[in-house]
Amino acid sequence: MFERFTKEARFAVIGAQEEARLLRHSRIGAEHLLAAVAGRPQSLGGAALFRLGITPEACREAIRSTGSLDEDDAEALRSLGIDLSAVRARAERAFGPGALDRGASGTSGAGGADETASRWWPFRSPKGSRPHVPFAAEAKRALEQSLREALARKENWIGTEHIVLGVLTLDHPSTVKVLRALGTAPEALRADLLAHLRPAA
Image (tube, rainbow, N blue to C red; front, side, top):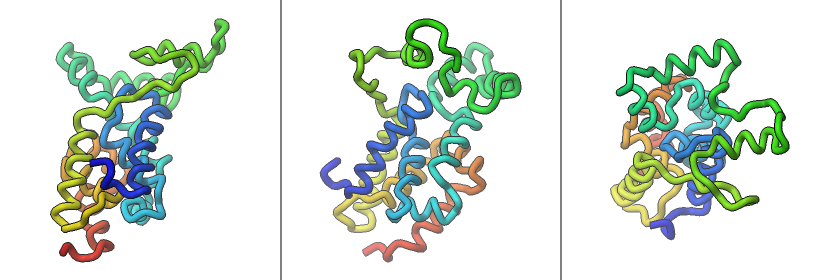
């Protein structure tokens, strides 16, 4: 399937891993795909996000503020009676925005912040290499849906516009929360994007 992706779409898929790394998340979610597409404003999908005032920075802030990362972990904590959103809110009141998303700022120990960050990651990688961040199930489904969106439009490529449509069709709760935090709704983004695409063949 990846051979169908346009250059911009490939950059967006690779960028989603970078977005997850920037936020120190252990999985790539559909919301990271949106943040990466927002970083390609010259593409059709990125332009739609840009028109609605959605930038990569705004996406990252919305992802942090909604606590939409690691939904499997959040669900496991909820089953134990722990509300991750409430914990995040208390931590941010005490330590500032994004307190749970970044490594400790102290530099105690030989490794300092890098050592702290490497302890945070829930998987190991060879020294000096960047850790691999796997795609969460909903991100994989969004990419599969992007192919369906392209086929439905009788287009033999997958562009950033199809990635955005795939993410929106999935309608994952974390993505909906992020979009609402950004001041829009999935339906509004979809309508704007479709209005700027050529009619489906």
